[in-house]
Length: 103
Image (cartoon, rainbow, N blue to C red):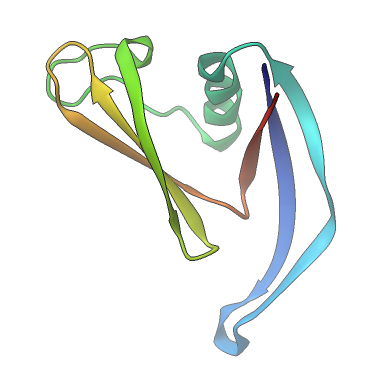
């Protein structure tokens, strides 16, 4: 299994509710694990603190629970922290950066 990180550009006029894709999404990296793909994504959008807000456990101490799609605008990834059992929710705008899982 591999993970791909994609960059996508969209022209947006929110006052008219008008959204236009500009070109095609471009794959900018392939990785053997989700953590490495997320690190590239984080570099693209700025440094993101991925530690558990409750106990400080690193992102590799998470267990995937579920994903939720918020219409077609965003996705939430839900994890459980293996350090303290807290629920961690990450939210990504789908028009900014895509990560594909190819099997």
